[in-house]
Amino acid sequence: MSRALQGLMAQKASDRVEHPRLRLEPSPPRRKLLLLGDMTAASTMLAEVIPLPERTNQVTRIKGVGMCLRLRPDQCLVLLAEDTEVVPLRERLLRSAQAVYLLDASARFVGFSVAGAAASALLNSGCTLDLRLRSMPVDTCVGTRIEQVPVSIVRQDPEAFEVWVERPLAPYLWQWLLRAAETV
Image (cartoon, rainbow, N blue to C red; front, side):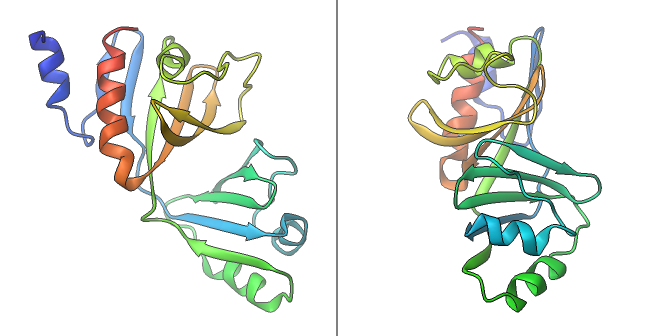
């Protein structure tokens, strides 16, 4: 193993890694809420607080609140901005008789930022989805696997992605990203 690769392997997930065409770093910690159930009802109840995406694999951004990923027809992941209150969301859902559930998933997921001209090539080296811009435009998300690890990928801009993974698998995925970055 080369010294450069040994150095990358020793990196912790708290470190930022720069390559000529690639930047890897952990996403900042933020509150994560999982909405489960009837998303049509949830969308109506939460419209004033946080507009939910209409379709699966779509992302909505709300300035000062965060963003919402429509992962499945019955599931949204809400990634809140640092100082956003959860109380208005909970209160609206508790007042509703609809079958919509709000779970705090903050400890469940870890995010990594993958950015630069080689970002899609890096992710595609472990994933069979077509992540080129024409197939996955900005503000879309997709659930897939990278090296058999289940992830959600969000395209932030033409050369930037956020990858969300369950916490127990995050160290493995981080090490894989570091190794794969050497070959891209």
